[in-house]
Length: 295
Image (cartoon, rainbow, N blue to C red; front, side, top):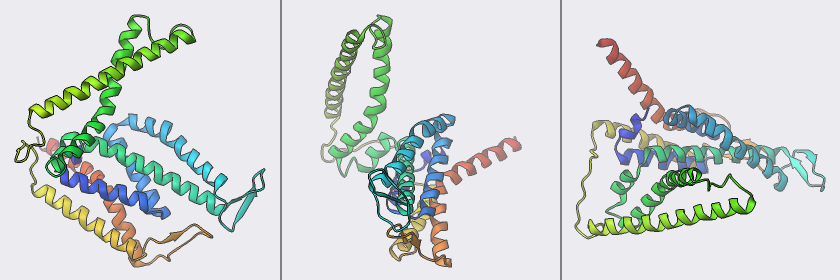
């Protein structure tokens, strides 16, 4: 399900600017939980069951490691739980802050993985190609280079495995030589690919003043509604953050603002913002099922 991907690049980009930005700066536990849950769910919707395995095998250890490291080095807080062998205290505030910081880190990584699925290179070039042609080209090539490099690396490794020269056969010295050979091949391929791409873009007149570009993106009524909804929720949340509706302190003791109608409305706006693409996906599935029943 990637219905949100079919929306205009402006809608996609502004949405991820809001959710990634708020995920980095909103340290309220409720906001962190909402961001983590929604980013995890949306990554699963985009990538399928593979995302569950990837998130659990990679992001869960990162989260646990971050949560454990913070209390070992951060000893602020007034609620002492125990003492380390060196005599430094382990406080409840540092433990809670470590868990929240880990949740923030993992949610941001999940949102960026969703961003890579939705915001393709052509969308980024469409948005910033005219404003910052050189920078947008470099960023687009960088984002595209990682999956392309991984695919080419698999091709090289499989080819050398057929020749009996892969990095998993032979002694340590032979494996090291085979690994260096693979590294040499990939380095050469990377340089040649960069030169070919630069020559191709230059021959097509990229960056020349007044150059026009073909685009398949059109801003329609559906995009307008989605953009208005995202901007209204994002701005309302921003105002609530500036007004102190999401204030939460971890040191020297854990404390936050008292729940009120206004603070609850801010939390609801954040939930609605994070759930926007998920709601769009589910709504399109519902429409498709209704159409199938009518046939």
